[in-house]
Amino acid sequence: METSGWMEQAEGHILHTYNRYPVMLERGEGVYLYDTEGKKYLDFAAGIAVQALGYGNQAYNNALKEQIDRLLHTSNLYYNPPIIEAAEKLCAASGMERVFFTNSGTEAIEGAIKAAKKYAYEKDGRTDHEIIAMEHSFHGRSLGALAVTGNANYRAPFEPLPGIVKFAEYNNLESVVSQINEKTCAVILETIQGEGGIYPATEEFLMGIKQICQERDILLILDEIQCGMGRTGFMFAWQEYGIKPDIMTCAKALGCGVPVGAFLMTDQVAAASLKPGDHGTTYGGNPFVGAAVSKVLDIFQEQKITEHVREISAYLEEQLETLKEKYAYITIRRGKGLMQGLELRSDLSAGEISTKALEEGLILITAGSHVLRMVPPLIIKREHVDEMVEILKKIFDSVSNEKK
Image (cartoon, rainbow, N blue to C red; front, side, top):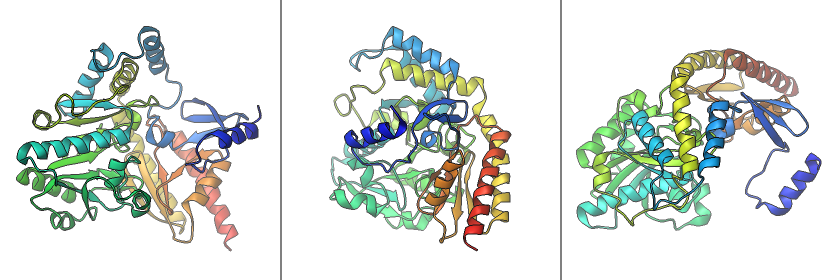
């Protein structure tokens, strides 16, 4: 079937919740993707920060094939070795003590919220506890995750949403403090805001929130679904700040293509929150995803992925700054590691640039209307940065000519 036929078939059967680009991707190799017509694309999106190891990693693929032949699923009524190994390795990598595996990032957020509310309930038996979330945040599409997502346009069609949530200004400690009262049970934020425009938390902000939470026995929930798993040059972005959350969520690169998420917590929170019967999942933590997570964590360690990210991201930042100096259309570069954003002038759409990039064989995504988001596979090299920069130069040169 021709590409156009596939697309027509998709539009006839798949619920239209995405405005997809007219590209039919078929296979991947390293940091490149190929469509059904054989066109090659340099991937600087990684399936929205998922494909940390790129495409076709044989050690990863072989681990999954072996597990398929051994055992795919049992349910959580029984133990299985792969998920136990994965749990031990993930706790070691994060410094957290307990983990619950989910099917996705939004489910990890749901679990984190439930754990925080149960922790508060165990203290005082009340059910009117409040959560403080951040403006311009994004935590997922389910109702609980939407409730703590700081974008009114996403929330409005589905209100009233569950829980009592207040929104504070990101990187404004006083804004958070002013929202706290005796009912506050948790503060939730992304260590680096992704969809909101690639904004890293400042050290003062994050450490200030941690101190306040400790003093008042309020739980700090850090969402590392996009910025975690080595993307900033640390296994988890918060580790650079020298603090530790009470609850953490992760997903995306945790499975490098296999749908899996997790929420982790300290022993203190685990001992005083979710008990048998409070939470569950049929698929979460089955042997197949356990094998994927376990192998991903092995490869990260063996290939020194975080060290590589710190090295290559310094070069990426340097080249992006050069682009910013060259083109007036780029106003700001923001980000950490291999999670970078270029904010564009208000008269230039990021969607327009990403569409032109796709035509030139470069996959980029956006973070809002005016920010180009770069979350490539963590295995990129200098040559891939150079290739990306040359394509963007060509695009910005053409935009300059169009606007003359």
